[in-house]
Length: 82
Image 1: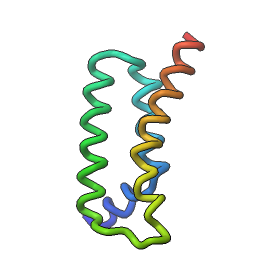
Image 2: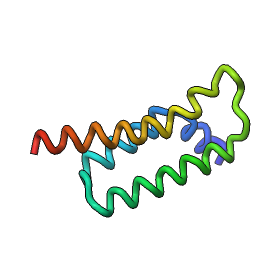
Image 3: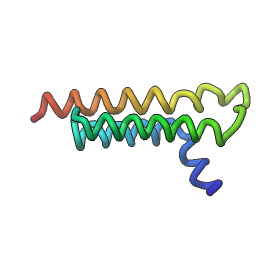
C-alpha cells in the first residue's frame, strides 16, 4: 500500500492517466464522470499523504493540474486527428 501511495504522489502519473482518459474516450459523459472520480481519488491521495515538506509541496499539488491538463490536451489532439 505504501508503494502505491509513493507512485500516486508523482504528478506525471496523474498527467498520464488524464491523457489516457482524454485520448481514449474524448469528451463524453463517461469520460467526465471518470475524471470526477479521478479528481476525488487525487484528493484522497493528498489527504492520505498528510502534510508535505515545504520543498515538495508543489509536486504534491501539481498532480491535479496535470490530470486536467493531460485530459484537455489529449482530447484536443484526438479531435484534431480523428
